[in-house]
Length: 161
Image (cartoon, rainbow, N blue to C red; front, side, top):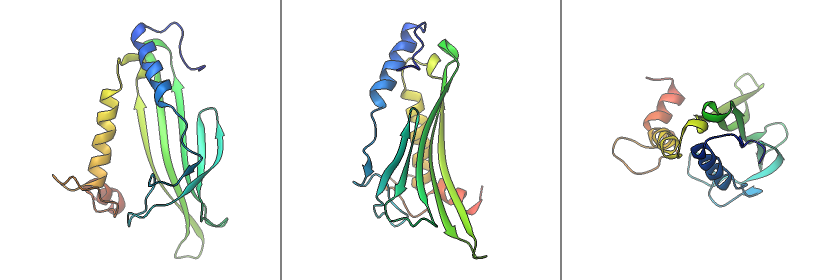
């Protein structure tokens, strides 16, 4: 792939090769519990477009006036030990507001990794696990909460600290 820096150190090349291995393309239809709503019910998304470093999916049941989209993109900057990858997973949902006008709600996660200065992806994986567990669970519970009552999710939804 074009984004591997040929002059990178052996460690960076190892990380880059790991990234290529893990960058397998998602299925064109996300329909086996990859995406759920707040009730824990599966929502099926179908791929609309794909380009070099981004893709977009649409909820299969969306209507044109109220799009519900999943976007995934990656941006890499720098070279050698200063190389970074910023990856984004974003959901945008258009609904009708109280005013009667369409409004868009967005929820997204950004993972910013200094890939050029890491020998493995263990620590970025831990950081992402911290975020997911904080948003989707309460205290010592191991139950994943889709209903927005997890500590982090409640903070995001309610604007609380």
